[in-house]
Length: 144
Image (cartoon, helix red, strand yellow):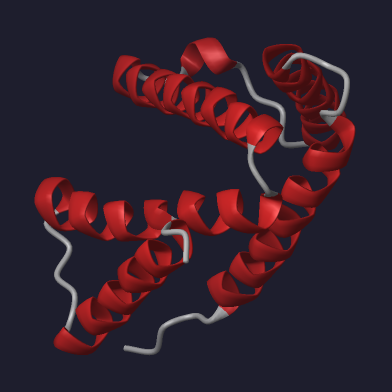
């Protein structure tokens, strides 16, 4: 069975935008409380996504979604909000070049959580790569 590689291009774009997020946030957070900065960022996202979903004709009645979908999207939203609050606080007091790599420890945690909760199985090569990422995060997080 052939697998689509379209996800890879979207992921590269995600990484580029995530990098820009750290740089723009570090510049923009000067002189403002990190929680207020997170609120402003969230408001911008709500407006942009509302326009995008409407413009592309993807709007549907959210009340027709299953309770399970609401539960897990709600939990995802809470986790996203908590992540953003923590990330902006870290950016406020730390260097973007140190905060962003440590934040990518999430890659390691996603692999562990996907294995534990979703039953995903990674190869030795994939676990080796994830271990290298973890090692890199540790290397970057300790002072010389």
